[in-house]
Length: 471
Image: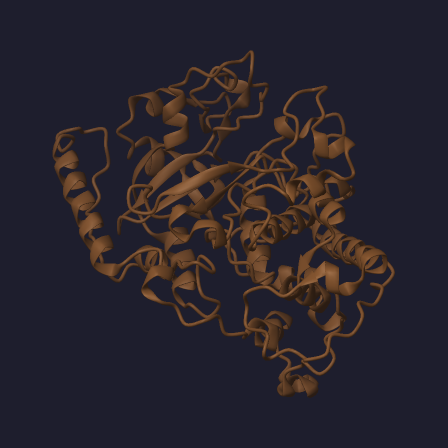
């Protein structure tokens, strides 16, 4: 299979190319029309959503009255805007993706998360569920896994804030297990951009932001537990740590300079009461112990068993797992123990690529075991393969379009050059894996036409050629 004959006419003239990223998004592969949406294929209905959020706003206003006399809290005027970018984002979610390719709402949402006034800070719901009582006999993560906060914006939008824990040029030490690795805020940002470049659109929008720990968190939170973990370091910097036994120590804290700290801001999805999701164990889950191994790690025929099991024995679920594995391999994420889907879309819905902060830890190593779903099952969506082939070409080189895309973030450079170069190297490894599968099983058995309308593609599919040698 190749991409011959699929170039946009304007790209024949180098003076019309403009940016590589613009050229990529102008390619026919990024302009394939998805089927026209029917009512049931939209996650939410406008009237239902407006009523739900207006009730939440009313509860918030009543809640704020209780704190109106608290002199230690900053007061900000909050407004509910039916045209707010976060609300438009929620209304745009459908069974195919979190957002449409051409949706201007996402650009607005990124800008809003980067600059809108924060009116409230709190722990996330999963950390509240722990209530600060982590079981240290079962959880061996002295890395601050739960060091993240929910920030509410002046327009009632909500974002998850993950603070900077590592410098850009730090690599994960060789002796560190994947499940005790730091979470990296820049990995969350980069993962969103990569997901969009791959045209998956399954990562909620993420942007970098400099947060004032005192003015935007300490003085806006109503949570006394959160306020209690703030302290001033010997260098006179504002710091805080997670309220959890295994990270409830000042040496695991994060500190501003003196108050400002960079971090990632990830857009929240609609609440579970109006958009239920289910969390499902990844069939290729890793062992979260120091010595254990899972069946897929020792049984090369493991996928044959998975193919017989619901929901992987029909539909797109297994293909979506392989999309996710390719995505995780490119970012170097070994921590995909579960995935989530919207229950409304059932078995044919897409997988949410949540929680990517353990990616981009090592640029010098390619963890081939992450590709096990692809190498063991030897199937891939045709649309995914075509885009990967496109991104391996010089004029659309993955590292170049990623560099350009990340260049618009306030925290640039988001990734160091070695991490960008690693993307090109890993892409070649993915293509080589597909080539080996095709050589062994034949193209018809490996490459699957997915639900996307492929009328814009060549009718005849040429054999998959061997990928370029690594540079």
